[in-house]
Image 1 (cartoon, rainbow, N blue to C red):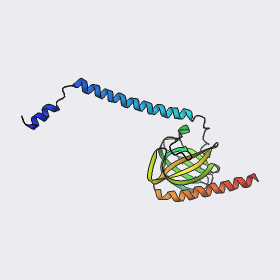
Image 2 (cartoon, helix red, strand yellow):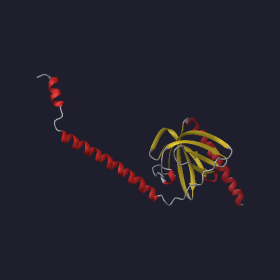
Image 3 (cartoon, rainbow, N blue to C red):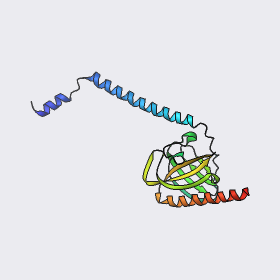
Image 4 (cartoon, rainbow, N blue to C red):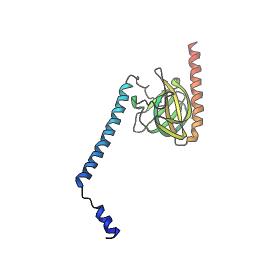
Length: 187
């Protein structure tokens, strides 16, 4: 008997119940893993249900300072790049159009929830390599902001990452200018 005939003989499926059983078992395991991941996401949403609603999204962000488009990668509690915030739609990755205006940062997300960060809530920005389980060695723009006493980091990746430096500087200037105005008004 030659090798070709032997290989054809061995390739014949003779144990259909065994193959079907293993296939069904594998599908059940995959479904179970998906269900557990979904339960974890819902559990996190329940834990974060105490986070107050985000500010209403205005039609415009005031006089435009910078605009870009790219990807929104998620929001975490400030300083903890793995503690994803899923409340109010902040946990889902999506395309995003960013507009930094004199009044704040407007994040338009086609097909997802838009959100607004008023200028007085902006604390600063930086470039970083990761946020919410997403690591991008060539960099992310991370905007730090306050919401009802909680500091948050939101990560973005512009379509042209060389824009990140200009964004870091512009957000820092807007945050400083707003802080100065607030302090002057308090006196």
